[in-house]
Length: 403
Ligand SMILES: [Zn+2]
Image 1 (cartoon, helix red, strand yellow):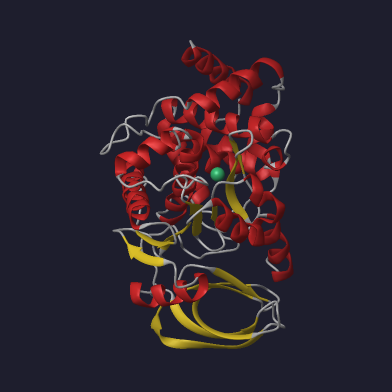
Image 2 (cartoon, helix red, strand yellow):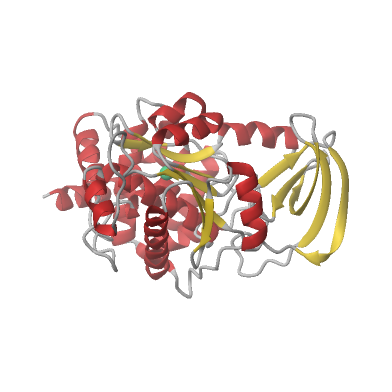
């Protein structure tokens, strides 16, 4: 049973998915969720609606969107043709009319118009095979990012696509907004993240489906990067920042090809484990991603330290049952490290079960929030009841790869 008031509260709590703390060179996150119907199935033939609703400022809007969900109180969750999720309470919703056509995503010319109107005429909109890039940074940096995103897309696809875990093409545009420098980024990010923006190098929002980044090579008083080699040289100085791009882009891809479902109950250890599994950049290789499958050195170090001194006997249980450790600044980095380590262990030693669990979570209905007990039950339905045994296997494995 779903009431929109509840959705709105939960949505606020879970707003943006992920960002990195520059000061400690580590990541943490918040999270956004509302709902999307059959996001993880191959086909989506959703009817298109025209909604007229009042936004939170009391402004009347008329939009075309799919109806992802109708709450019991008559409120709706709408998926816009540019991929955003909007909500309207029964009071805000003025009119809804089903149109005689199916939902289709916006095409580039319409998107371009919309993005330039939103961000300004100094943003240039380009398209790669799977991404729309709306960039205020120079042409070279945008192009370089585009090819990085596409490489990552291919890597993720090769890694996961199978008969048992079929991935689908993105159903709405995957938009990357790239600001020309940190100051411009921070100004924008602070409207969404508040004070958190100052510690962040990029984020992906499940609500807007956008990742927001900035030109990491644009340091104050430094000349811009002229060539790809120049970009790499500058980025090598800050590999952690570089990992932000890959981390956020992994989230975006995973939420758009069916590895995860936007607005469903996604345990953070699973989504963050996925992003941290891929985040180690492979700057030397232009074509491949040779670091995939190797331990993530930063997360491993953090995990070793955690396991040695702070890890409690019920650590696995709390990781699986709730997201709390990711939301508390004091336990956040350890939670990320454990999410990475645990995902790494499962992918390496229990791949079939890990895939089955991914599938189970991706098939969850939107906006139905599991209780901690349900999360544990779901996990145990795939990996078995004996958590203590699994914990011992996990720690043994991590000790082995630490040698
Ligand atoms: Zn993340």
